[in-house]
Length: 167
Image (cartoon, rainbow, N blue to C red; front, side, top):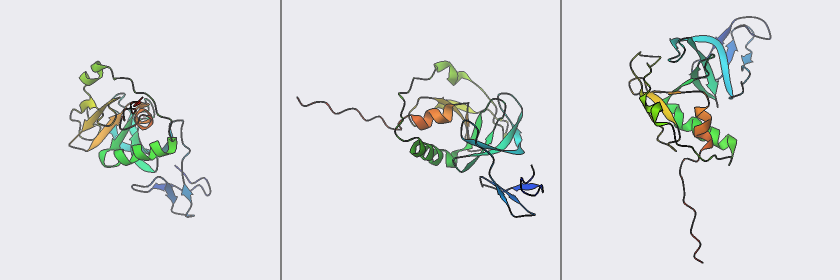
């Protein structure tokens, strides 16, 4: 990836959502795709657990993730997952969705962690429980299929029953 201002190579900054040009000092933010993900032009060391293409360094909501350009899956570190969903909820406002229960067959899926190659644990997400995510406790990462991050963000984290009318 080259600097759009001077053409020199850009350097991906660790844990940042931008690249820097070592020549002119320019800061480059890739365009967001339809999911709000900024995909950098640099491959990561792991491959997508679904389609086996190299994962790409990316950012969403200011947080660094790994992203599959083919299937649009996301590998998100557990330590940023809660803050990221909170940030996305704040951006979306009160556009909450009523969650649909996940298909129980999704719990039978077995995929390998892109970082260590061991099997990931498929489980209902502990927030609203409306999706099944895959987690690797060893690497502290979550794999989310396309659209799942936004489903988490659009679903209220806690269901508060409506107060009954005292009549």
